[in-house]
Length: 180
Ligand SMILES: CC(C)(COP(=O)(O)OP(=O)(O)OC[C@H]1O[C@@H](n2cnc3c(N)ncnc32)[C@H](O)[C@@H]1OP(=O)(O)O)[C@@H](O)C(=O)NCCC(=O)NCCS
Image (cartoon, rainbow, N blue to C red; front, side, top):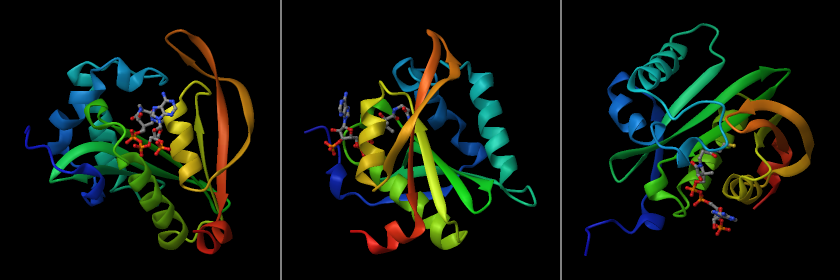
C-alpha cells in the first residue's frame, strides 16, 4: 500500500493561502496539465511566487474583493480555490487541484465551500464561474455544485493555442438554500 489516504472520505478544508504555500503551489503550477486551459503557466518559480504574493496581499486589502484559499486535505495543500466579489451582489469562483489528486471529489468539495462563503459569508445573490468548453472535469464540478449553464461567450481568453471560448455557469442564492 502507498499509504495514500481514502481521499473521498478525507475532509476538505479551505484556509487563506499563505506565503509558505509557494512550494506546494509550484508543484502543480509548473505542470502543463494543470494549466492546459488557463492563460498562465506553466510557471517559473518566480511566477508562482508572484501569484502567491498577490493572493496573500489580497487578504489585507480593504475593501477586500479577492479571497484566495488553499485547499487542504489530509494536512496537505492540494489546490487553490478563489472567490471574487464582482459587485452588484455577484461573485465569481475558480479552483484548481493538483493533477496527482484529480478525480477524488476535492474540487467539488472546495467549490461547495466557496458557494457557502459567497452566499452566507458575503450575502451574495448570484455566483458564477466560467470554463473552457473542452474542460470536461471543470464543467462536471460546476454541474455537481448545482450551477446552471447560461451560455457560451466567444473568444474571451487568449491561451497558448489561441483564443478560447468560455462557458458560463451560475447559481442563485435561493437555488443553493432550496437545493440538495
Ligand atoms: C477541474 C479540476 C479542478 C477538477 O478537480 P477534481 O478534484 O478532479 O474534481 P472532482 O473530483 O471534484 O470532480 C471531477 C468530475 O469531472 C469528471 N471528469 C474528470 N475528467 C473528465 C473528463 N475528461 N471528461 C468528463 N468528465 C471528467 C470526474 O469524473 C468527476 O465527475 P463525477 O464525480 O461525476 O465522476 C481539475 O481537473 C483541475 O485542477 N484542472 C486544472 C485547473 C482547472 O481547469 N480549473 C478550473 C478552471 S474553470
